[in-house]
Length: 208
Image (cartoon, rainbow, N blue to C red; front, side, top):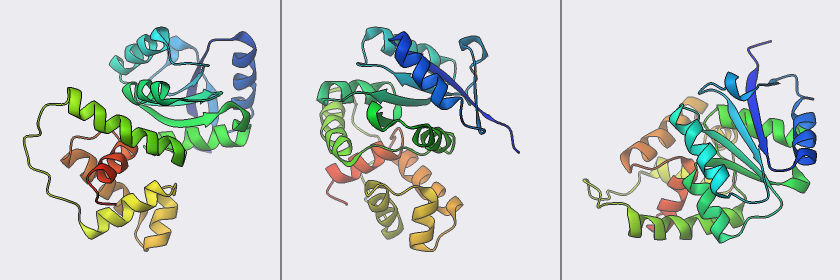
């Protein structure tokens, strides 16, 4: 068995904290750690009703320490909460009622692979939020938008459909490494945060 994935949880309710911790503890692939044992490889699971100032501050603290893998477990998420989630770099969102031990484990494993998982409805909201965010806060890009290659378009469309790296590789007859390289190239070229941001950007530009 390989090295276990370290996970740290943050919750705004002791009962919720106990429940999420118990669910994560059932996985043989994961190990729960205290805050002082967090490393850049640690996946942070935020089980909160809302992303308030305290959570934003905590996420930024962890981000400064190199931690970038955040999963949000929440009852619901509206437009304002989604924008907050994007701001702190959430890579996956799951409603609390769907947060079974197996689903949480899957999301944590995906996060360690650099993969994101957002429901389609939230991806559509992300598209609108990214558009407004870039208009208001991001300076003009140093390079003109040059479009996407056929391969990049195919990959992003499948990401938008909810497929993970291995599923995309199987669908397109590529290796998983090729899919990861394609996504890395897109996010790097257009100064984007992650694959969800890349999908939203491509949607805004009318490319997918």
